[in-house]
Amino acid sequence: MNHQNKVSVVTGGANGIGRCITEELLKAGALVACIDTDLEAGRWLEGRYGAERLFFYQGDIAERPVLDAFTTEVIRRFGHVDYLINNACISKKGLLSECGYEDFEYVQRIGVTAPYYLTLRFKEHFATGASIVNISSSRERMSQADTESYTAAKGGIGALTRGLSVSLAGKVRVNAISPGWIDTTAYQGTGEAVAPVHSEQDRLQHPAGRVGTPPDIAAMVLFLCSDAAGFITGENINVDGGMGKLMIYNGDEGWTFEPGGKS
Ligand SMILES: NC(=O)c1ccc[n+]([C@@H]2O[C@H](COP(=O)([O-])OP(=O)(O)OC[C@H]3O[C@@H](n4cnc5c(N)ncnc54)[C@H](O)[C@@H]3O)[C@@H](O)[C@H]2O)c1
Image (cartoon, rainbow, N blue to C red; front, side, top):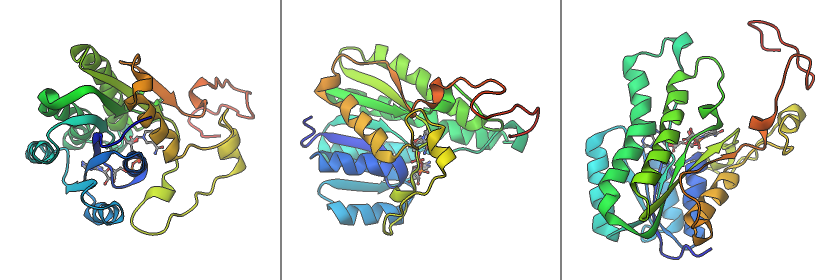
């Protein structure tokens, strides 16, 4: 897959899955513009790969002036965009925690409005064969209690993916990835990588036999951006170790239903 000198924009690219996407794109020869609130982690990453290949911009993508300034600077520096990776999102929980109006709306601005607005700002600057990859979640389709702010944002970005794939038909391919449980421990902060620890139950409950890692998601991002995925657009691909395919009823898989309980 040839990503040489492809101009890539990654939101939330300083930690976790986003950092892994940033690093894998850089290793594949791409140029990355990364926006993140975490200045320390961003500067550390920039120092590691060099500011000529990794342009780090500190800012909160929930804020329109930040998006305006960031996109202007990206176009000034690089002239066009090949890949837009809408990765950043947060949770402010939900109904049971009394997530209020401002918190709920803030999550939607990060998870849905920013991906839309970045696409709008870059609309005239996407290169031929450009690709957008939106990071949704398996929680778009399945829920635990008290997760509405996050679940709504993930449903929103999934629907946005479909809509944009049609509006940008023939110009930009637009796909989403829905990760399951991805352990990001090894991709946080500025220190040495810490190996994640999981129980046997954590691993074995996944049909794939393990918990996910950021490279599982980055590999799919690089594939979706590549010419090899040239016939794929409007898709939302689960990368969840098969968890979303495991049907459990009372008495299955060593699990007993207790109303209101967790066993
Ligand atoms: N880790 C998982 O198990 C998992 C599962 C499904 C989906 N996801 C999705 O993957 C994406 C990355 O998740 P992660 O676990 O790596 O998260 P993370 O918290 O480890 O990293 C997120 C990064 O985004 C940055 N960020 C957060 N809010 C921001 C904002 N307003 N403006 C700019 N930057 C901001 C943070 O500083 C951080 O660097 C998210 O969209 C998340 O919903 C993660």
